[in-house]
Image 1 (cartoon, rainbow, N blue to C red):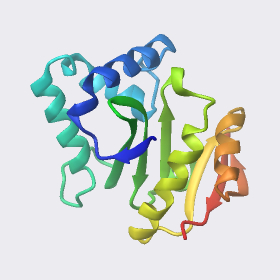
Image 2 (cartoon, rainbow, N blue to C red; image 1 turned 30 degrees about the horizontal axis):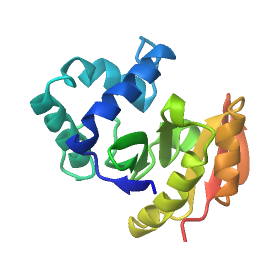
Image 3 (cartoon, rainbow, N blue to C red; image 1 turned 90 degrees about the vertical axis):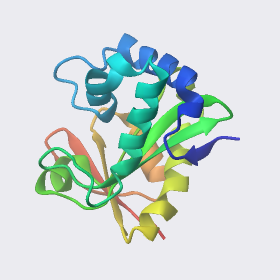
Length: 179
């Protein structure tokens, strides 16, 4: 059974395979502003080296700390990986507070499921298990956004109690109760 875990080098081999799947979709190219895209560009070249991968997982875990260094405009965030045994299936990040940009376009939570694990209920289960973590961080309700053409993500949000608020540009905004 899949579970949320802190980023760990234990699943490095399957994580690398998942990142190759994302790259095959065009993720990581210039202009890809997703979590996965930015991390492929910023950290991907070192992931094959076990010590550098361990450093990467530590940096991701540290982002939950208020005092951790981060780029301007970024907020503390808790990232959890969805794994089953040694298999990396996806990631979810909880942004601890909203900036003006996140309020309109990014929300509190973002997630990705590796391409070969999609359409099997992982995103819905991952979000359901993450909502209590958000509540423990005093985030309730949770703002989650998705692109207007991302029907799968909309279904995931609605399956977890998301109520449509409005649309801003191509982003649909939903409020999801965390408790």
